[in-house]
Image (cartoon, rainbow over all chains, first blue to last red; front, side):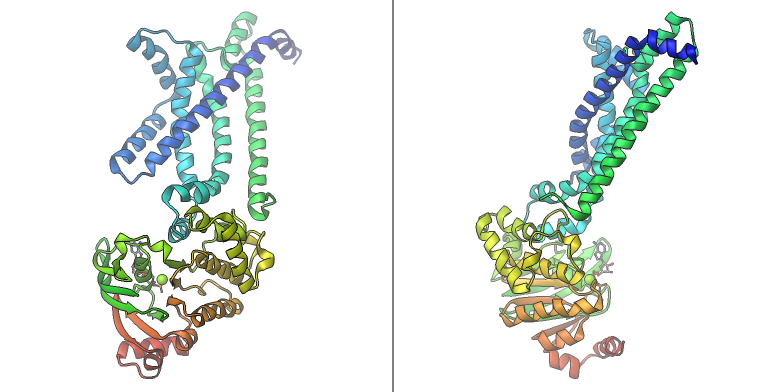
Length: 225
Length: 237
Ligand SMILES: Nc1ncnc2c1ncn2[C@@H]1O[C@H](COP(=O)(O)OP(=O)(O)OP(=O)(O)O)[C@@H](O)[C@H]1O
Ligand SMILES: [Mg+2]
């Protein structure tokens, strides 16, 4: 136990930077992934078969390959294809964004489809256009399902982005690797990082849960004006 | 006012409407009755273009409905109300007139207050649909449709999802509307209402119009065996 504490104290700079980079990567990627994911979800709900097919193919492809491979492809592929060396962080952001876009697309699609189709019918019978219906009727209801699911996606990303260590990004897992080799302690730093990941994911999950409760509460009573 | 001419509707292989023709005159109340699955809902959904026709035409004041925006003239009330749960009662009623630029928000609000007053629901204007009883919800849904000032109102089993004690309050609103001269097409299992309010009763079976007549004739003197059977079943029940 004292060993672990002294490791934490001695290497706190590494861990703190690792946490910061992990959170930055997840946050930026989820934001970009959400934008791209919205577009893909709209494509998936499109009337046109070809557009739907493209969206489905993208989603299946991303979900059917490991993130570690995706990150490596972006990192090494960008050099192989363009001759430009991009940073490990940029490569990770690109890969994780493209990855989470696929998951976010499915989150948005299922959020939209969870809204009762009677809502579409009522809006149509009242003369609202498709886009007016989406904006004023469907999306505000779907968002109550979408936001908590996005929170869970964030939690997933925190864990999965540990594979960015394989291209040398100094995120939390890579920080741990550095600590392991400089301290000549191969085991204890792993316990520390496991606990750190757990604290991050557990607290964010709890926050998402609270938020979800609040959303369903406002859904029932609608305190807002 | 509304001319339905030899319409057909298929869902894939399934033929749901078969050569339906029906005229609906201004101010008329038409009740659509018939067993489950006979195509009543499909027929009224075709009237306001919720469903596309497989064949045939529907004319509204002489114009093919395919060429006009029917939502301006035809309102619809659904079995499950379909109120917008994230909007207040007031917003539910004013949303469409404002978004479709039929009214300014001020005008829409004045009209909504008028409708709420008429329904005795003025005190609910800032509430959300979830806090209302089924009967109140359906009356708000009627107000929402009326806010668009339609010439025809379609009702698809507007009282079927209600607790029995709330059926009356909704039927009364519908009766008042009929009295005010609204043209109405009403799919209903409430035979008492059909008899009392409908000018014309249309009995559908299996995608066909089996019999069409005045309410008295249909109920007291049905011509078709199938009509007699249906009525005796539903009236004895
Ligand atoms: N979107 C659809 N796709 C496929 N079949 C449908 C669809 N809508 C309705 N049908 C079928 O069409 C037939 C007629 O349905 P419809 O809802 O018009 O009947 P209904 O007379 O309103 O019955 P009910 O009294 O049960 O409401 C049914 O057999 C139904 O299964
Ligand atoms: Mg029906």
